[in-house]
Image (tube, rainbow, N blue to C red; front, side, top):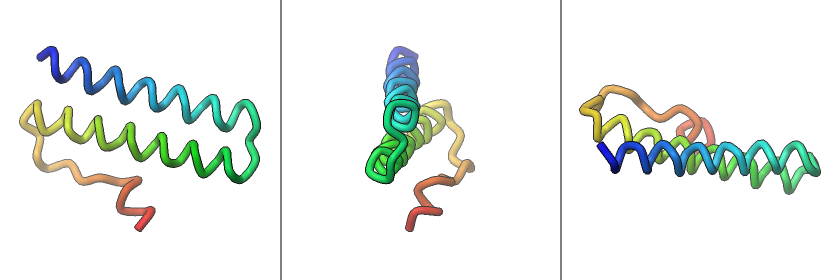
Length: 66
């Protein structure tokens, strides 16, 4: 359970970084960095779901980026 909490906290940090990127500058490089943070957050949340036993949820942002 502690691992799931840590994964969710890391995801939340990445989401805050994404928000900061678009709030502070909002130019193209900042938006690209924000998208990277979103992808990282999604990856950590996907891992948290797998730790909870949910293997049916498919990634959304990562697939759209490919």
